[in-house]
Length: 91
Image 1 (cartoon, rainbow, N blue to C red):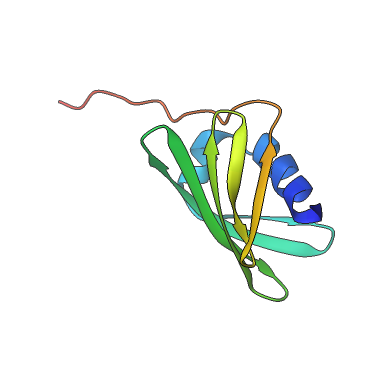
Image 2: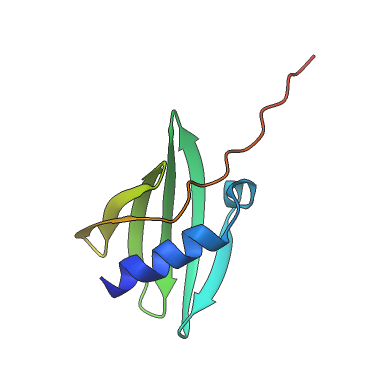
């Protein structure tokens, strides 16, 4: 549950477009390294936390988040949906 609260706080604090590349943040002396991709209506976030190298995969759809942290299932809500990247037309 502690990890879920940390992820919820991090997801709320990080704007959507910043998730497109690998990013990091530190909370309570734990560094989280992650990347994300958009899959249809979902944003899938994968990464590891250090020290320890615990891996996680989270799927975000609207205000709902679910996935696995160190092999354990997690699910929680966030205060507001992630910002979606703006799509631009190409010529």
